Length: 459
Ligand code: ARG
Image 1 (tube, rainbow, N blue to C red):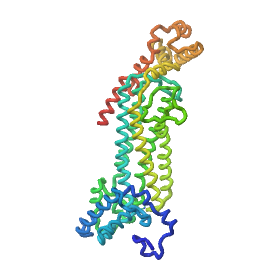
Image 2: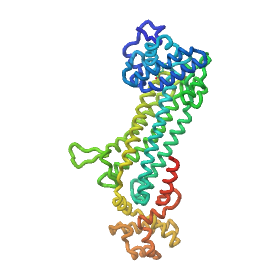
Image 3: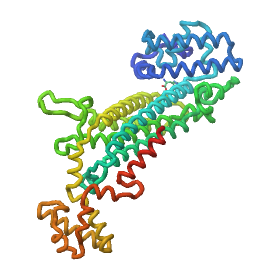
Image 4: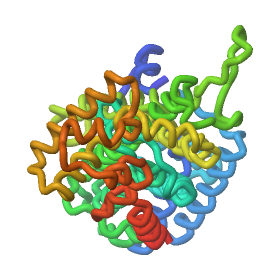
């Protein structure tokens, strides 16, 4: 038996394999709420413009609420034969209210309908991501505030570089997440135009009011070109791109947590709530949540590449290829939201091992740059010469098996005669970080100033 929605010209129904490859109801039922919201707005507009009667619109709008409650309570029976959420909803509406249901699809196509539903869904996810990112930023801010003056090693090449403050390191992630936040907000502004009323592709001969439906659905305006409206999936690509960048940031901190929580580093203790044990090694406490967050970028970026690949080379306007957009976005959105929530929990629960951080901050000749800077400042040495002198002192300390502050004044003077006792002041890690007062530098005062900037912005 052929499809009741489009089967007029068909003598036979689809092969079972055809039905399996064609149906999207298995996943697009996640857009049920958006579909019904869009249809309710469309019906109200059809009545307001005199295209259908008020009583038909009323019956449609009421019936759609019943369908929604059936779906939300889990009593709705989804049918693969009805392909997708759009036809499942409409078909059930017909069971419920009869003839008026058939008028809902006037001046509309599944092509503008699916673009509208999907945009509404993605827009909700953008809002959720914004909330999730802000919550995580607040967790980082709290860590930063607590440890604004704790010292730790800063790394380049994962080799000790210069001492930094814990607060400064935490605030680096606040900056990254702040850019993520603005990317999502920015994408939201650009995508917020309603495709509804683009119809199949060319617009419609019915006197519809696209401004009315746009407003009802919280869009800023209708899209300006019906071909573009139904063919566009930029909004999903922008969402995925922003999600990928954000997931990449989360992955970097996740990696740091994995390293920092190891027995070799002992920089942090992860809470039991976000760790797991081993079934064979009783001593183990594994950073599984961090590892999974580190990995999630794979799925999210994978979804991004996948949708770009689906969309590239597609002629205007709608092609069924575009049905392959949803699962990717759904999976990416779930992965992102779960990662944000797990990361927020881990950051909130994170305990820094302050003595271990401080001890590590002073090792590895981390204040060599401070020594070179001192030679420039106090002895008026050209920086290149100061660099060389300091390098010689590092080699000396290395050969003696000690750190820079452990060298004697005599050791120092043998390399550069003018060095005085004052040099030892800058070899301490606290003096080192306190001296980095340049805007955006690691000095605790600077870090505290950035913390209050961000607290103000997140209010
Ligand atoms: N299930 C389809 C999708 O997800 C809806 C649009 C179908 N339109 C069409 N003309 N076949 O893209």
